[in-house]
Image (cartoon, rainbow, N blue to C red; front, top):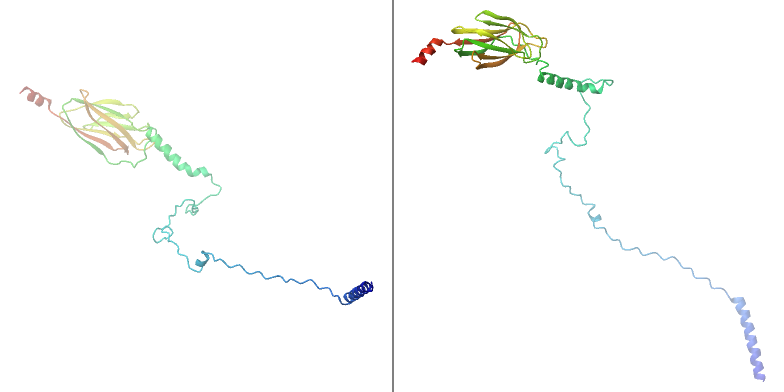
Length: 247
């Protein structure tokens, strides 16, 4: 019994002593400070293309950019046209005026093709010969007309220096007259008496013999006043031809 009591007292004394000592000497252990660890850098992966940045690139030459080989054309698609012009410009001019000369030229050509206007060619001031004609016919039929615009062209017909028709007005349709031939050489002239209102004297002729056989046709263009269309007509001796047929 004494032993048990002794043990209890001893245990109580030790407990009180321990608590007293623990209360005076106990120091709390501070929480450990954890420093941020340095991250280990990742190994750098080199770009295969970056290795060639220090090496100068090689560019394939373009022959179209080399003006010493192929000069650049001034007419490129999308290229801005030059506004330079030697002609004076009027900012207040009608834009349609630039087309007027061409329209007038086209109209002038259309009128000429339709026979409503004559071509303004240089005037012919020398006589024109239409050659020699041989025939056994007693007379020729001369048909004539104005093949251009009807602008008052006048002619005179002379055979062997004798006036056959002193004043013939050329019209659009053919008119006609006869010339009677002598045996041998005959000279026949058609003389321009004036110039028409639209230009020189212009005309067309057709020649037929007494039997209606076609002999010759042609035109004269822009004759000045007094210019002649000249013909030499040789009438053969009809009696000699009859003698040749009877033999």
